[in-house]
Image (cartoon, rainbow, N blue to C red; front, side):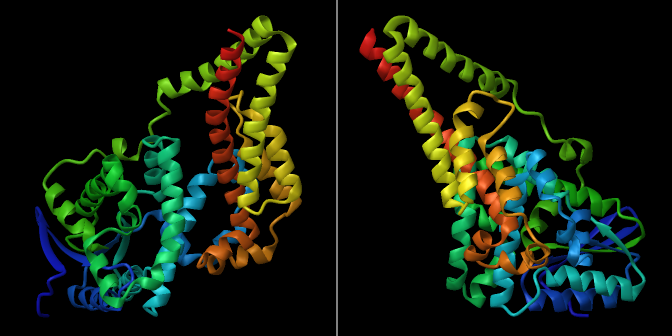
Length: 390
């Protein structure tokens, strides 16, 4: 067949690799993938999927098995919400183009099975990628990321078919996070550069002598650049622990707050000490409650966030959002319908707030953001009270 500009030929010893750069929501890409695999008769087809994303394609009902309580307890609400926002972005673009999300990967899987080829998942687990991303981000960066992803849901209607085709030049994650990434270049290293290394290594070491690899076009230059370089998958798959400085700060800040309370009672008596405690409870409780309200939390959820935030802010082991998320989960327990319709509901902003599963995640995230903001607001107020009695 005539060579296509999105087809790239690579070699590794006696292994022949046909690398196809695709757009994740392009009918032309899906057709090209199917044609190339049929013509090449490969031993192995590598796809830009991790095992969990492969299973999400093959097991559409997997969401019904989600344990939302476990997600909250394992502190994965932010990760799951971000994953769903990414899926929503891709699905809504796919709807605009009248194509199934990830159609080129689905076409690759179908063509591989038809050709009797082995399927190799070549991308890093999305959970590892997102977890490594969060480790590099502070609270403000995470807030910007969340709002950027939410805003991206409302921008899709303005995209034309030509805009979609231009996405061949960028990874889906990079497209969504471009605004945040411009301010945080380390995100690009994790989301793109590290995955380029990972993909190159997995494709190079895929079984068989004839390999077809299907990846987003944005990864092609990076894969070529890392093709002849050794890759350390262990390092790329490791989620670094929280920085010691943050752990220490997590305990020092509550200790400092308690010391301020004690000093306030000592120097200013009951009146000053009571004023400081009142400011602390008001700032933390009210802003955490506002966060729960923004997420359309149940009245008991809002109340729990108001009560819990002033105390959880002084305990690094517990977050206000975990408390309010659990209360929301028990107050409005998700039904089978919510899990069955999850993939449909995430196609719209309204759906994120109306589905009980995603609403719980929103409650966790927005309550935590409100509580954190409350701490920032309360601290200078405590110092002001102390300044009045100095």
